[in-house]
Figure 1: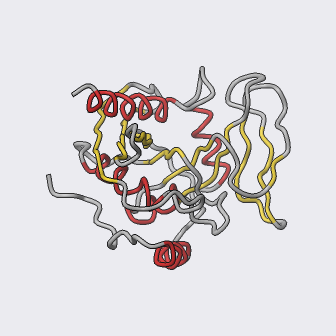
Figure 2: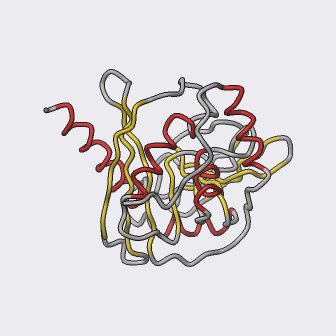
Length: 227
């Protein structure tokens, strides 16, 4: 299959990665309120030796959350572990997996940050810009900024702020369970991102598109390990 998403060549040095991230940041549009009918969750797993990243894309129907299809890709790791630059470490595998889906989704949900990032261009924003697809970042912990503690009920939220700017939202997706940190990636605003995350997390802390992608990435890793 011919790749649908062909970003500029991936930098292999931190300096070049920072320069590209700054360039992409100028193209991020944290605005919009899409109504997707096909959402793809994107997540990654690493081989035991850390030399290979397994990217996974899981497409689900919305609002039913029915699994439609999934794809994975194994890509050698070529970029060092540097917080804030995960797009350059995991992005090639995630885009390769996304390209293997039979059709493009209406929205991407990425395990990682979007605008809740020191340079306002986390992996969700990076992938959203290079694909042109609306994207959301959903992370387990904060990378930057501060967040208040949301109320205990499902659906409670608290803003994530840095230097007076609201860059994301802490969202309680399940009662009395740790919040997830949601931020726009591209072509969606904070309210829209929170709405879709809650819509896709009816039972568990992690939204269903990311749960499905996590399972696919783990299975791809285990399959290779067992050979």
